[in-house]
Image 1 (cartoon, helix red, strand yellow):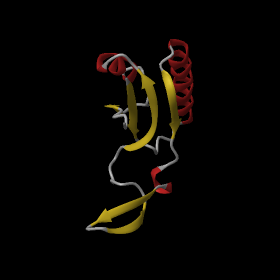
Image 2: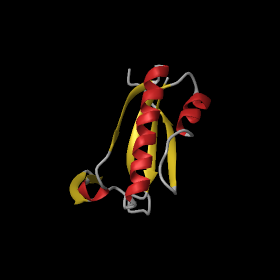
Image 3: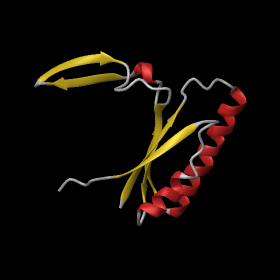
Length: 113
């Protein structure tokens, strides 16, 4: 089964040492996921101010600059992993680095077809 591990954190973290440490930790985790055969994909996302939201209300579409929701934590990246069950996916999520304050949402993929 595949799980999406969504990483939410403060995208304005500006301490270079912390950024370097977190980036290095992500590289190590990526290698570990690859070695375990669990890595399906993943990427870091650009800052939320680069997002465009297509909103559908009552059949009408409109475009908006910025993310879907304005919060203190923004979606900053994700891993798509293969795991035998939710507990295994959560174990991977607990290994994700993210600076001083962050959250990881674990969401099962719902295959089409």
